[in-house]
Length: 124
Image 1: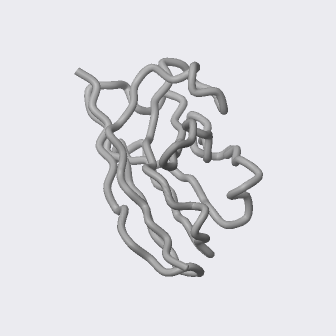
Image 2 (image 1 turned 120 degrees about the vertical axis):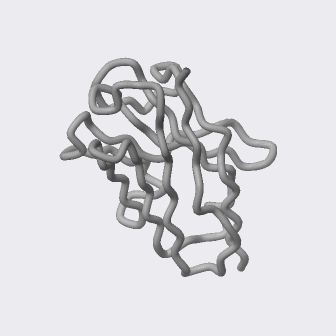
Image 3 (image 1 turned 90 degrees about the horizontal axis):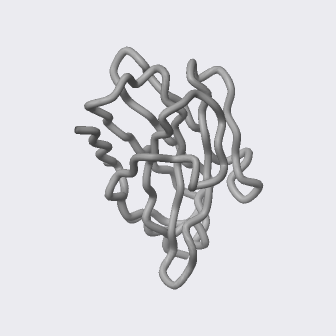
């Protein structure tokens, strides 16, 4: 059974930083495409970042490029999202996702498994 469990969310002031983690189990981690998505209240889920199979290539939405860094540790089955210079508009539930094939995917329909999410709240 595949499980993705996020952690690291919380409340932070604008301009601050947070580091999210996603622990995966039940899958062959190093062949899965991995990504981060977020959903703010009343809005659709949106793509945030994706990492390639080996973690050497990343892909970001324009809204977070230059502020967020996605990475993965295949030896530990962990996916990370470092978030800096946070803005109130970054407030959302952040979820990690896994696709059953390697690649960089910005479309949520490419992903097969999802975590429950962790709340990130940025105060102004």
